[in-house]
Length: 146
Image (cartoon, rainbow, N blue to C red; front, top):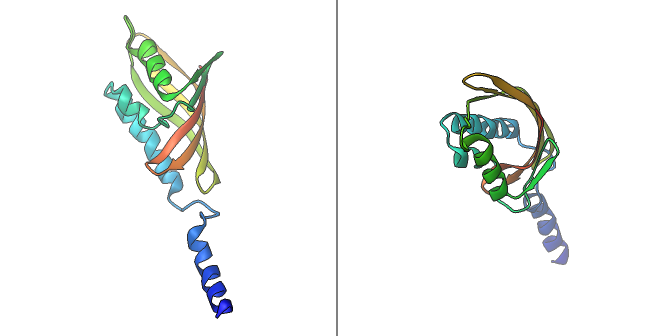
């Protein structure tokens, strides 16, 4: 009887453990977060754009020589930089996206960002660490340069 129970317990073990490899559509789900961010940005919806980020004080955002900690501080930074007095958000595009799965629930995303403004254009590189959470894939670390 004990052997039978142990065998049953072992049979259930794979269902209890997280998968060792990402699901085939994980890259598509990560890409959708980025696509949704572009749509939100281009309709001037910073809160919608920030939905792609982990809503936590542990979120990290590095840009230039500045480190920002936390979801709210990152939102406030975006508001000041792109919706402050005399500022504009422009039209956002992400290009040259490379998504590398580094586990079943982690992704490393690299690419270029480009903002078309009324009188100018700006852009740079970004590296994101994303994590699959109960609410979906979220950016837990963003390192952006311009």
